[in-house]
Image (cartoon, rainbow, N blue to C red):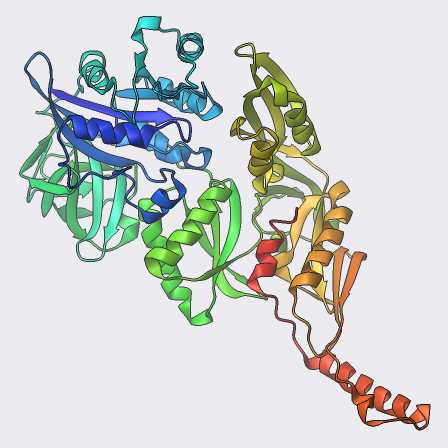
Length: 596
């Protein structure tokens, strides 16, 4: 065990974690030149296209140190985007140390700080690394000062490297061996292994990735999943190189995978403990907490008969992405589907894209919203994820909405614009402090519903991409909200309902009607689009009917002949309107998100 090191890489998005991981793999000869490609650990097409890490990836390297000893290094590469912070927490729970990568051209950003706090809470050894030092715009001394202020380490403890050229990579490997402690654990104790990830393989069932804390696991051993309570035979165990490599035993301190032919996705829970049936452990390892979804949206199959396929697809995705939650729901407009909980809008977009690519499922998504807490007049407290689940107005005593503490780090030049944006979004400034002469950190308390839609995009555009953003929940606060309904020909469309701050309702309703007027195709009859709060109509637009020119055959003659034909047409339109139904295209549901 003294020659094993488990570590992860944490950083803000785009600070070069995956590129640095590539250099580590090259330096340890884990891959030959033929297998090498950029971002080798990002194995989803989606990750490569967007240039972001979505999943944390584990890989084992072997390295001969300068002292001549051979070491096994288990690396877990983690995502940097705020929506995937749960992945980071899982990686951190199975490591003893972390490389904190900071971009020398950008300096410390919000996600750097929040991921660092996660690592410090778990008592991980932190190795600060300055990346991209080969670039002309690198501010090496300034950024070193920022890191020293943040962690309280010495200047000489900060390693300088370049993921692009490979400079300084050997020093990083030596620092991992010298500074990160060896894993603690008793090889002779009963088996305790923490599951930190799982994937679905159509041929082999569910494959779970685990880190052994105590004892050891052997091929063919009869094992038990502690919390799920189910028992299996370990058909194959092994270590994670670029491809899976079977072996006979994995002992304490190491990372590996287990195949045992599990077909039911509900039996493998990330954070569960594997133990031996013959010699079971007394208690499970304290895993990580269940994640709380921030944003809720309905996913519905395009064809009604694909409902069961959609359920199976979401269950398989959930294995790989434990932060996704879902429950069945139905809608008048869209039929049967699922109410899904996501960590943010990027997470929602990625799930939608993965459903399409990996399972060939086309889905319709409703307007995302957050969960509200309703106190009724009889004193009951309900949590409502969907505006259509709201009780009658007369039964509501108070509505509370979730608030967050937002931490924004920006250049001082953009401070005024950023503060204005936050105040427009109903934020309250708590404090601001200058990290360096031209970088300032500001903390705002604001409603979660205000940042759900387009806050992150707007923040990036007003700060020219420099501002970084991180947030965590601070509970519910009372708020003045109204339920806005959209009516088409007097019929409410439940998928377009939304709960909105009362003072913004009129403006939002008017814009929504205008947008829908552009998107709903013209029918043979007039379509009235109305926005209503309760019984009060606050905005209206009309989509005019497509009309045939019935008077074309009357040339000249008396006006009463034309009038007669027009009246006849009018009657037909009226009758048609009573039986006609209005189709709302999928683009209309999505356009509501992109209102600006």
